[in-house]
Image (cartoon, rainbow, N blue to C red; front, top):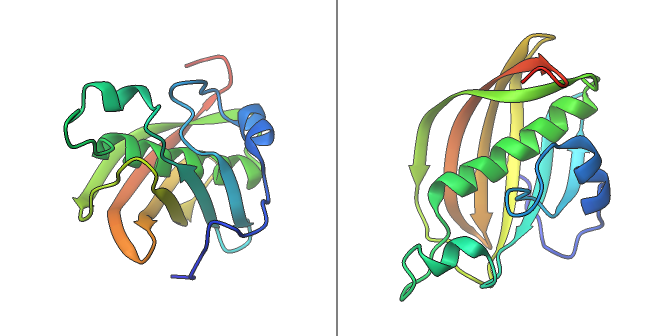
Length: 155
């Protein structure tokens, strides 16, 4: 795993991400892409976690932590951006499965979530992403995600 800090240069900003992903507030969960290598099938993304997130109102309001499923969704969104950049522009990646998800460290308001994704399998029909999300040097989540490609507008 490559060490990544929140002050790295931005490869894709939120405007470019919004042109790729169909998600919008409150479900667009990545703020920027810090690094991407389409040849190796790797991506590094960032999510800034703020107390203003709508889920903090009801998810452990006295001890706010980001729901693990939303961290997995952020990892999946980073993978969808990577798939798009790997020349699948006319299709959308949709979730097929989640395997081996492990939640290891709570993500709280004020944290900067760094997402690392690797696509060990990628084809014109879909693929697989292994991903992690870290806060500083703490591993928060690790997961394997399977996805399929669907033509845009046919979901």
